[in-house]
Amino acid sequence: MQFLLALIVAGPLLGAVAALLPAPPGLKGKSPDQAVLRHGVTVTGVILLAALVLALGFDHDQPSKMQATTDISWIRALDVRIHLGVDGISLPLLVLTALLTFLCALYSYFKLPAGGSPKAFVALLLVLESGTLATFAVLDLVLFFLAFETVLIPMYFLIARWGGEGRQTAAWKFILYTLLGSVVMLLGLLLIGVKAGTFDMVALATDNGRGLTASVQVIAVLAIGLGLAVKTPMWPLHSWLPDAHTAAPTVGSVLLAGVLLKMGTYGFVRIVLPIAPEGMQTLAPYLAAFAVAGIIYGSLACLALARPGNKGDLKRLIAYSSVGHMGFVLLGIATMTPTGVNGALFANIAHGLVTGLLFFLVGAVKDRYGTADLDTLAGATGAALYGRAPRLGALLAFAAVASLGLPGLAGFWGEMLALFGAFDPAEGLSRPAFLTFMAIGAFGTLLTAAYLLIVVRRVCMGGPRPAGETAIADVQGYEFAAWTPLVALTVLAGLWPAVLLGLTDPAVQQLLAGGPR
Image (cartoon, rainbow, N blue to C red; front, side, top):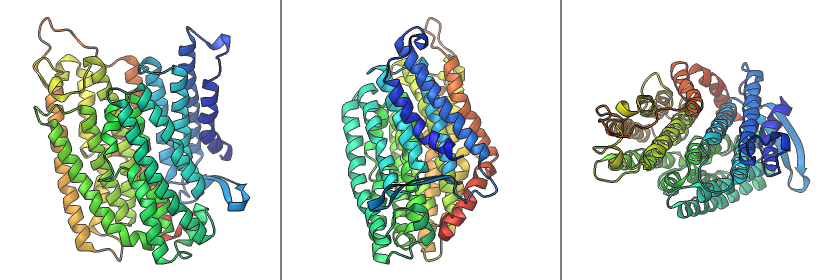
């Protein structure tokens, strides 16, 4: 188990180095480009297999216990340690990351975005995977920061080199926002480490803030929360996200929405909640207020983009929808209750599955029509996908209704539990305030349903393809292979939520009571 976790974290990094080396003659296949793309699929496939074996070997009777742990001294002067481990909170995120990266590598093998060399693309994809997996596995504050920052450079180049129109501006906006937030977060992490005398996240969580004064906790939560909120992204620190998603290649958008945004909310759960509970309690109402503002803002922005004549970009619309969906995650965390935090973690996974699928589908629509402009797609000679590419249209409609939170699909449970948590927040939090936040969030679900149903009506519905009009390709074999796991897991999580909640709930209970042991 220890070896498996170390392989999962370090394997992609070694694979990235190997991707830059010349391919052995017997492995080149038809061309060196094909060989390196096949290398990317192989490495990410091995990491996914290792993650699944780790999940099967995980002691499901003790999900609150840190398992597969490694604890080695690294920088003695600062007491920084290479400390790795997984529990019921981090394990689902590890598997989600490994799955989405593998599906992106598989998709890219058949549909590589135009831009730089395949070698650089595969190497950056693997470095991105390694940094993300490390973020969910490390148990030292300094290592967490380093892993948190590792993902910035590869994502910057994926947008800047393989993105579409406006990619340079979007890439610079992405990295400047996230770097500035990270600088402030580092100060908060150092403040905790210096004041508590350790950077070990398990020891700090077990201490549950007793070694930190209330004022230190408030300052630390402000500083760390700001950096995490930028990555989440929380309104009004979200403005880098729509540009990044619109310009990014399809696989970049999938990983950005499906994995990178989860790093911010994971930091709130793993670091802020257990290590600085008094500071979190002081600032929780403000976090909840920003969360519900993001829910409403994201939904209204999507409604504006979906309106005829507004030249709304479908990728941009889904990006704004992420602001709203992550608002539910932040609201659940702000309640500081097991119900709310479990809802936040469930919504994290559901968003990764559903929004990852949505970006895959929109990328396919854009490839076929040469545009993601809603007015063009819904025009007289527009998509009408049900009549022109029925499988693609059906999948897009499925992903849309899953995103709006239809009962029986993954998107429902996280949002519902977050709202239930707001109905009865933790002791010390104002119940009238959180009831107000719950009502606003519930109204946001109606707005979400409205804009997603408008999108389905405009893009998918219409008559059969007129005679003489050029046909478009329906779902291809490689697309079917990349999208089917996301569809299946969306249904599974919706019909059998206990699979995920059975992992997270004991770990959350322990975390709120005094950290994992």
